Length: 303
Length: 264
Ligand SMILES: Nc1ncnc2c1ncn2[C@@H]1O[C@H](COP(=O)(O)OP(=O)(O)OP(=O)(O)O)[C@@H](O)[C@H]1O
Ligand SMILES: [Mg+2]
Image (cartoon, rainbow over all chains, first blue to last red; front, side, top):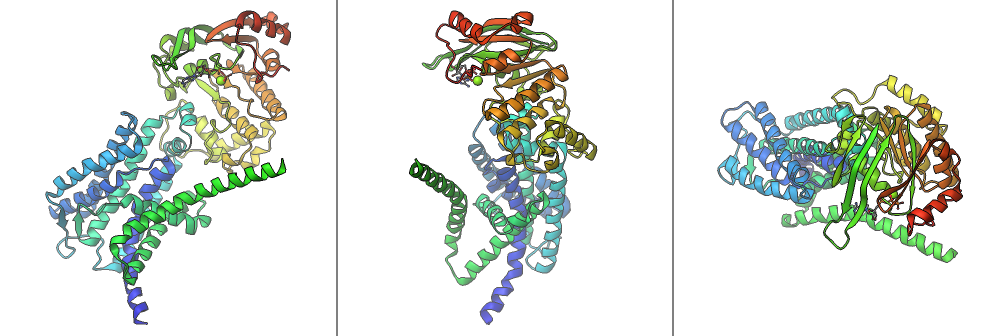
């Protein structure tokens, strides 16, 4: 009984962190699902968002303004990856890794050291683990706002052209769509959202750390996958689909808490996440292979 | 309407795979010309259409569409002048987007895309009528994903998309080749009624010799990157498949019609 009670006690924290990572996962969804690009910039841009927000807040900038600037700086990171990829023709994965590396240095320079405390008692942060209930409410509102804005944007002419770019670039160009620019734009929006989630995470934890984004892409992908697998059936509308991704982030963090609570070695968590993602990405492929193999056999048997 | 002057393209220049795909092509299309293009495999038909569409820049020569030199214009900008339908039904539409959304994308070809809503109800009403004209029952499936359609249905939608905004030039690259004969005929009839009905200028590559003769007012034959035959008007009307086969032998040398070539 005690066990269950104390497990339940960790739930609000898991939900709050899950919401933060859910916003991050929405950013990943834009590149991974809509643009069909696996963008590794996010491991860096998440920390950039955290570092910018922390430093500005410490220097007396209004917290909302600090979050806005963090988002804009994240968009610049996306712009850089986009330029590497389109103008310089570097493969998307490598472009992301290059920016990620650049951001590592940039993030250290922003903070002046490897980490920066942002104690909630001293600064007017809007989310903090000291007040989980209030933070959850705030994060739900921010998530809803992000989903609302994205729902509107991807319904516009420009947004629709972005979806087309990811879906069929050749057709998009034939319809007069500047696919190169659209990829850049998508990467900017994605990394802006990821930086925003970094800005929220640093407030929640009361700390910005150079390592806090390591493996973020895997957590983001895991959330996208979990959200799709668990709630995909109910998520046909675009806004609902984004909500599913956010829910995926929450489920991921609840499972994470559970694993921590059971006492599993936390050093193994990143490996477990990566394996989960690999399995989910690999299973459809293997299934398709198996099916086509079966079909061939059947055809041979009939012949 | 279209003018190709001295257009050449060599693939993999300087390697063992070097291939002169377009050999100093000159071609002028008049307003309203409906030109069928035939030629053996690898003759350069698709390459010529790709050069016009701006998939890449030709090595030499210039391309003028409707008085505008588009030689250095990127593909997406040139799209303002062009409607295109490809051989592979998968290539012409965005599979994960709805039929209506695809049409709305096409309706904005050559226009600046803004932050206005992607489509209006009034627009959808127009599309519904146009889909009705296709006679494939697609008018009731406006919000279906295009990926759910058959190849023939997708080609018909692509054709509609290509001509939704009157293009200066319509490029059709074997757009019925991947379809079963009955569907191919349906799409071909549709093509003819759209092209002649709205007085379009069109280049249509086909492996179907009968179609090449039946449709259009002009026929060109390509071989080894060159245009080796250009027949129009009355002379084209009198053309028979036997004539074309003879010309193939006389002019094309090794470029004999292949097994892909449909004779009638
Ligand atoms: N992107 C490319 N890279 C290298 N070679 C190419 C490319 N595109 C075409 N070629 C070559 O150029 C030549 C002309 O090809 P093209 O596709 O224009 O022929 P085609 O007349 O359309 O033939 P088909 O009837 O088979 O479609 C061929 O030898 C082809 O291999
Ligand atoms: Mg071809």
